[in-house]
Image (tube, rainbow, N blue to C red):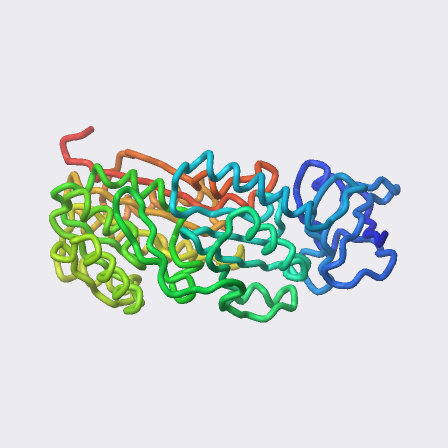
Length: 396
């Protein structure tokens, strides 16, 4: 067996459950493994800690698979991982039309995401080792779920770290266009090939339900609206009006089509603009909304972007609070893993001070159970969501 031997004392993180071995933690390598090979991971004193996938060109040199050094990493191994993942999702969301079927290291499937939209599955991986074993996993998925199509959305630059090209397309079966899903009574057409991410922002499903009771009779501004995930839920819940703001006209067109599909088009207006600039101009124009929803993309792609991202989050939250009258509501989210929950709370507190607003917290949320968090791996915890009310002056 090919083996990676760690530097002295560098085994502690792995023993605590952290599933990545970084290149600078390795002392030496035996057996000349190629990229994607299964290797033993051993401590400096020779203790075998488990098996992982070797990645010669990546900062993440080994992605952990199992502590059972005798395990055979074959089709049966991955089928069992997928079976367990599927069982969790079916328990968490019985009868659901969509969910994240596999969430990378949290499901023992390194660097790999699989989303389900009805009878269509979407495959994505950042790991060379998993890419090499793709057909084993696709075979298991077909056996477990009998999808009509399996599509890949591997059009992400991070794949280059493992020497993988960006690509997307139909891998198996026949894909005949957008898939219809239903969430909290609202139907969405999901374009898994050209929509955002893998087609839809599945991770906000619980938060879309959380905002519904507060939307009735309010004028809603849904910023970074994408295909209308939040905005359409507000319209269906009885919002007086919903204005969608997004930089992508294609996304807004899909949102309008979804609104028409649900008989909600008369409550919806759209605007194509860069939200970072447009929110400030709305303040200058004296605009006012009763409910502002901020669901931006990850401003901080890595730790080196945290300072710039912090300023962007402050900017949009200050403007959003300035658009709200007393009693108005702000739903604000961050999917930047590099910005922790405590740091995001400080951003909101700073924004409130700058906007001259005082807030009370109505709801806080994180990832749904189809995006499980490993307690030993901070990288699996990324989503923060808060719902605040802007206080009236008379509240002490």
